[in-house]
Amino acid sequence: MRIGIPKGLLYYRYHAFFETFFSKLGSEIIVSEQTNKDILDMGVQFCVDEACLPVKVFHGHAASIKDRCDYLIIPRIMSVCIKEYICPKFCGLPEMIIHSIPRVPKVSVEPLYMRNEKELFRWCLSSGSVVTKDSAVIKRAFISAVTAQKKGRAGINEQGRKLTVMLAGHPYIIYDDYLNMGIINKLRAKGIGIITEESVGDGETREEVKKLVKKPFWTFQRRVFGAACVLLRQKLIDGIIYLSSFACGIDSVIIDLIRHFIGNFPMLVIKLDEHTGEAGVDTRVEAFIDMLERRVFNENYNPSPRECVFSGQNPV
Image (tube, rainbow, N blue to C red; front, side, top):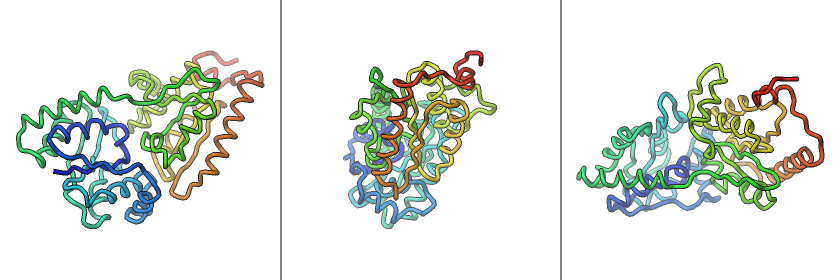
């Protein structure tokens, strides 16, 4: 059986698990190409206008491989942490694909909870049964997939350069070079170090969100906000670049929370959609880096009272 896996959304975080699991079942894995203009155009064609850019791109990835596979994996990811959830668009993603793209093959529709191995195995048992009815084979494939996922290297941590920024946002924007206009390579070419939220431990982010009046409902809200707080408090970064998808409700909450808690600390927010031009992104990134260099190397920088409060010191 040929298993189709679109290279979009949380593929960038969990691809090792899905690819290992189905390959161990004896399936041929069909993965879509890197995001490109054709895939983006197909996504815009098939997806509803109100969807965010990453969801549109996912539609393009699914459409690009639908005729080359027998079973299309559309993970309906509901939750990865206890009492926290993922973007609601993930909950309806299989139905969006089925009703928007013509002539799709069989699609995985089972809800996927990844809060523990027991829940994860339940999904594997259901989805794997399409390939084989042998539960022992599914169990062995599951163990191999979990091992591969744990071994996978996640995130970027490139400290020790002249300047270091936190590159914040959802992984499906940070690690998709077409959507973010190759911003990682652009920063590296300018000698800028990069840190992403994966470099901060889960326990540390949970401690930081205790400052909030209400516990975050969304996992990415807690992770990105908590990581930004930790990295700033430990003075590991000189600025934050947040890559946000236009019309993303979760991003709108995270950005406001970060801005409220960091005070005058430099933060650049880049909103992306299918009309975003690379020249505009380049100009904004270059201007932000110039500002950071002046701030760090040419000015006598004194933290504002809010920044002192944030860092745990008493305000002057």
